[in-house]
Length: 238
Ligand SMILES: O=P(O)(O)O[C@H]1O[C@H](CO)[C@@H](O)[C@H]1O
Ligand SMILES: O=c1cc[nH]c(=O)[nH]1
Picture 1: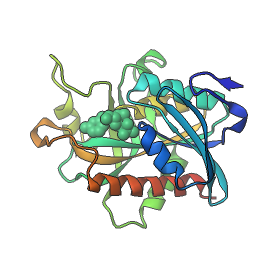
Picture 2: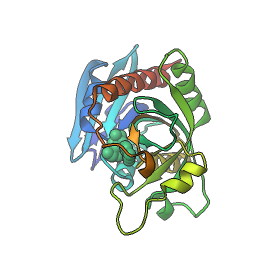
Picture 3: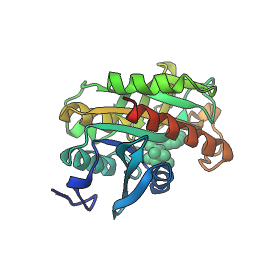
């Protein structure tokens, strides 16, 4: 089967993949794979495959925002993918969740537009219990602060005339905000595959805590290295 947006033949797709927004991050993950090769490249979708501890896996970039990412998730699943871990970045909503730390999402608030066009209002966006358990287990051997709980998925990155909903979600105990996890969890539930997500915190998203957005610091590079390692181990654990 040819997957048109990913621009590759599904026969070479592994059943387990890591996904991330940034094509450069996908390349970085692929550097940890043996016999890594670029399977397809089209638009924001860069797909690498290779072996990690002997397991055949893939890493695919999905770009920024749920609609484009959903095209990627759907085509991966059409192509036979059964387990997906998103390795992303997010802004913190809670003071104790500091830049450079990691958050494993157990569920995502659906404030994206994409999922509301494929499932009814009230349908939950929840992580797969088993894959998420593996992420949590892998994270326990590291000394960096790693939190787990509810994240929020928004379509908006820059505030317009309508105020960001940050304070209500902060008060409700949501840990962090990003732009694709709710779509991933919803699509995975709908199609019967496993999905989980881990994100590196690049600053405080809440206006009261706001800092300059800079996802390119050394601290972020270290956090991304760590989430990459945790996700690779969780995905390939027997
Ligand atoms: O770093 P990635 O995986 O792209 O994730 C986050 O970063 C992007 C915004 O800069 C959005 O895609 C958001 O979800
Ligand atoms: O969507 C995002 C991603 C990273 N950091 C944020 O504040 N928001």
